[in-house]
Image 1 (cartoon, one colour):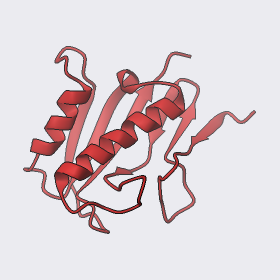
Image 2: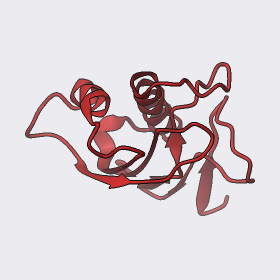
Image 3: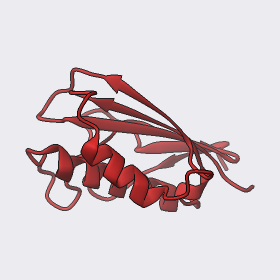
Length: 128
């Protein structure tokens, strides 16, 4: 069995031959998780819908890796407009309601393509 395991998600589209995430032992790291609708492949025009989809992708990656959002230690978020965090914070608080039990988070200004307004990537540590 390979030491590294690629994590693939249904509907996770990418132009390059890469998985949604990868796991080695207890460690999971994702690639860019976008706001694309996994059912249709369409990129919604607004940040609200894109953030909701991105957080669905986060949940899906963690489930496919054998964990949950409780295992995330850091979430990096790239926003086209880093000052517009209302939709991001709404999804963040829904996923991590306890202020004493949240992962680290970093928001970075980004120039994204294809109508994307948000990209997320995560680092998680699972129970072995």
